Image 1: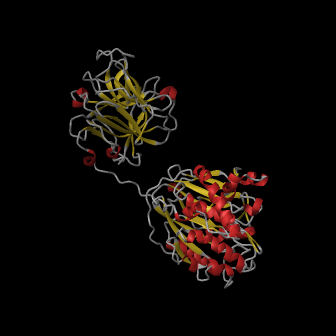
Image 2: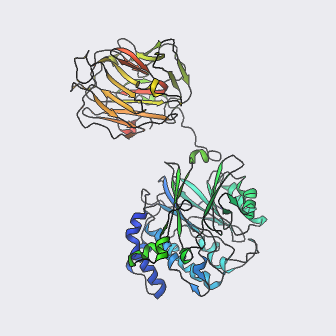
Image 3: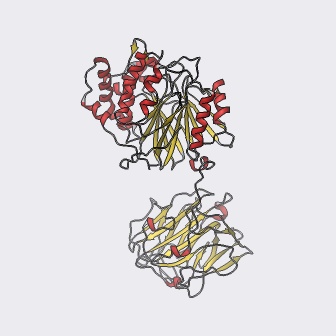
Length: 612
């Protein structure tokens, strides 16, 4: 049985690239580890600090690291026992727990060469480095750790004495083990959710398979990383036993999205589609054939749920730690592996990949009344097709009328930004030459037409451009704009035929807020970056009475001018949604979808945007 445990959450620490800081710190650390192993003296202060220091993982950060250690057998081989490399790797985890937000370590089996008591005593002592700090990790038996002709019903063994369930029962990450003790499951929290490591024996019996399936059934919404000693044999190929694991366990359990194994070399990868039609990434990592038996080299799986990627790197902490004393020729080659098999990225849309067993519930529609925060002067949302007037839900009378050009029309869709309050959007079908489409315009006499916002404002809008958006026919269309020209307002700086304000999309799909403030003749412009097609975006233009900031998805853009910009010049003419005027005439119409639009007569913090 595998059950959840409470997990202590440490102080927030953003995970980051820790290898550079590691290079600065580990020269002393590696030397200390080597000295301790070879002379038996007490660890120097720097190594003690590494062993005692560090923080608990940041369980809410969407960036975290899983460390993986494959076959260490040649370091624990009869009279040739050398724990220094593995101790250097384990202390690395402590030293860089915060920088890389290291949440867990998985050893992939073949801890020892002969499965002897003395070998297990030595590696058991080395893992005490993690035990003393309460760090979560898993191990499993490889063919060299037990009698290879047996399965998980083999009974007692030196492996079980050293790394059986009794070793892990006090760890908060330990979820339980099979009755034979050779299979275990471990749960850790990262990115605000629970993850499960299923550590399986060299050979599963029928009871082992039944136990593993029971664990998965008891955690139906938990993503699973399966670790075992043998599975992938080389790129795109599974071993016979690996195929059995796939057929009898992995293929029918969608929760298993990643598997890790050692045993064979060189490193390799395979990808298979499971019964649910989803990809499972199967990775082989093993360095025992390399210098110093792989020197307890570790592979770091850096998960980033914001970028939907796992960045993988492979380093040798022991060799890095020796760099200060000078490296031999073979060490220089092994200090870090940078080939495609050892340093790569895996793209995974985590929300989509996990949706089959743990779908993310759609954010419910929010009532319009909740969007009418103090200062709201206009709020439009599109809950159904537009046939005439679109009411201003703020109650301020800034209603919109439909204008068609060249026989164009305005469609409606239930498609919307996932954080949009309303669950609908208008589908504008603008085309430049000949001009065709439909847009919305505030009614004559609407209070918004004469508003100048000298004390500040916030304009928000959601939009999405289709795959057939073409800069030759669709560029420079307005999302929200104010009609009337600079010339009509007596402001002749820059192009006097440009409208007084427009939130538009350039030929490179860059959002641009270009307007004439009350305090200057020319046009003040804020520029955003290119926004990809077929993606919903939220824009916000915020003016605090002195300066204007453009936000894309709640993030300020780089090209926000520092010059003062007070208010928005007006000549009393209407605002447009989906339309853009030049020289007082409609010049372009949006080709894309437009969701909720809100205008507030004050500067809003990001936490008050409609996305929150």
